[in-house]
Length: 64
Ligand code: F3S
Image (cartoon, rainbow, N blue to C red):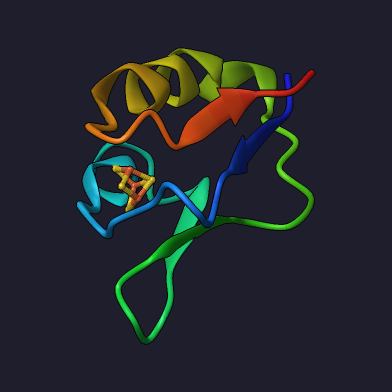
Protein backbone atom coordinates (compact mmCIF):
# COMPACT_ATOMS: atom_id res chain seq x y z
CA UNK A 1 0.00 0.00 0.00
CA UNK A 2 1.15 3.52 -0.82
CA UNK A 3 -0.54 6.77 0.18
CA UNK A 4 -0.25 10.43 -0.71
CA UNK A 5 -1.66 13.72 0.53
CA UNK A 6 -3.09 16.14 -2.00
CA UNK A 7 -1.59 19.51 -0.99
CA UNK A 8 -4.42 21.37 -2.73
CA UNK A 9 -7.02 19.65 -0.55
CA UNK A 10 -5.26 19.43 2.83
CA UNK A 11 -6.53 22.11 5.21
CA UNK A 12 -4.52 21.08 8.25
CA UNK A 13 -7.09 19.17 10.30
CA UNK A 14 -4.27 16.87 11.48
CA UNK A 15 -6.53 13.87 12.06
CA UNK A 16 -4.16 11.85 9.89
CA UNK A 17 -1.24 12.62 12.18
CA UNK A 18 -3.35 11.89 15.26
CA UNK A 19 -4.31 8.48 13.92
CA UNK A 20 -1.01 7.47 12.35
CA UNK A 21 1.95 9.63 13.38
CA UNK A 22 4.29 7.06 11.83
CA UNK A 23 2.84 7.80 8.39
CA UNK A 24 2.33 11.59 8.35
CA UNK A 25 4.28 14.73 9.14
CA UNK A 26 2.81 18.14 9.82
CA UNK A 27 4.78 21.03 8.37
CA UNK A 28 5.27 24.54 9.73
CA UNK A 29 1.96 25.63 8.17
CA UNK A 30 0.04 22.77 9.81
CA UNK A 31 -0.33 20.85 6.56
CA UNK A 32 0.30 17.15 6.18
CA UNK A 33 2.73 15.24 4.02
CA UNK A 34 3.47 11.55 3.98
CA UNK A 35 6.60 10.21 5.62
CA UNK A 36 9.17 9.10 3.08
CA UNK A 37 7.71 7.98 -0.23
CA UNK A 38 4.34 7.09 1.26
CA UNK A 39 4.80 3.35 1.35
CA UNK A 40 2.84 1.82 4.23
CA UNK A 41 4.18 -1.22 6.05
CA UNK A 42 1.60 -4.02 6.31
CA UNK A 43 1.17 -3.55 10.06
CA UNK A 44 0.12 0.09 9.55
CA UNK A 45 -2.27 -0.42 6.64
CA UNK A 46 -5.35 -0.46 8.84
CA UNK A 47 -4.40 2.88 10.38
CA UNK A 48 -3.63 4.29 6.94
CA UNK A 49 -7.18 3.35 5.90
CA UNK A 50 -8.52 4.98 9.05
CA UNK A 51 -6.63 8.17 8.21
CA UNK A 52 -8.01 8.13 4.67
CA UNK A 53 -11.55 7.68 6.00
CA UNK A 54 -11.20 10.40 8.65
CA UNK A 55 -9.75 13.25 6.61
CA UNK A 56 -12.61 15.78 6.33
CA UNK A 57 -11.14 17.14 3.09
CA UNK A 58 -10.68 13.75 1.39
CA UNK A 59 -7.07 14.79 0.90
CA UNK A 60 -5.48 11.37 1.42
CA UNK A 61 -5.42 8.79 -1.36
CA UNK A 62 -4.39 5.19 -1.62
CA UNK A 63 -2.24 5.37 -4.74
CA UNK A 64 -0.93 1.81 -4.63
FE1 F3S B 1 -4.73 17.46 5.98
FE2 F3S B 1 -6.69 15.76 6.14
FE3 F3S B 1 -4.55 15.37 7.52
S1 F3S B 1 -6.89 17.97 5.96
S2 F3S B 1 -3.73 17.41 7.97
S3 F3S B 1 -4.68 15.37 5.31
S4 F3S B 1 -6.63 15.02 8.22
